[in-house]
Image 1 (cartoon, rainbow, N blue to C red):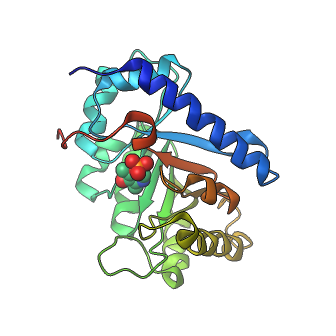
Image 2 (tube, protein in one colour):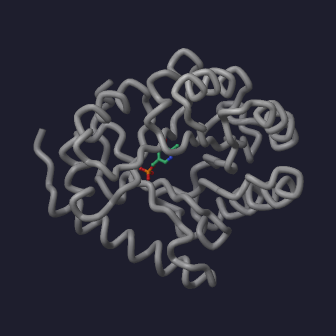
Length: 235
Ligand SMILES: *Cc1c(COP(=O)(O)O)cnc(C)c1O
């Protein structure tokens, strides 16, 4: 598959600059925001091009695709994989070990499956809880008032650590999405006293990452603005 490495690198550098500027404008240190380059459906060569330009964090949505790319790119010693898709318990073994952060946990059965995989591998699996901030029926995620129950379940598990919250709000103009980002930040603040490991917020994508950073995002997940339009899902 042909890729345009130069275009990928140019867009990556432009997004990096915007992430940095948005952090500074919010009075935050630039390194408080991790740019996760979302590479789903794009070939390994596209990831390699971004890696060679210094990118280290990559996000994938499909467990099989992640597992395949991890093998194809195992020579990239410093790569950090993020699993940002909906995870089913029976796919946990494809994701852990080998993933720096699992972004979208929304039920106890998945946390328990990750616990088993992490314990067997002798590691701690770091995860985020996906929150359905807009109460959309069509979307995954835990209702805001049910997050604490899932946190309590996870707190009893020795090999899973919940590091924060994630959201995928309704698509819209950045200013329309801002209240949902703010809601996620406020929810984290309200829970952090009882759950001190909750220090990350995964929010913001190609169209709205600057607003998300202004609202406190620590992980922006940017795909299209770096890699271009997605090809059809490759499996
Ligand atoms: C695909 C995807 C992204 C990236 O979206 P872009 O609009 O291409 O930046 C971010 N987060 C999740 C959960 C995704 O599935």
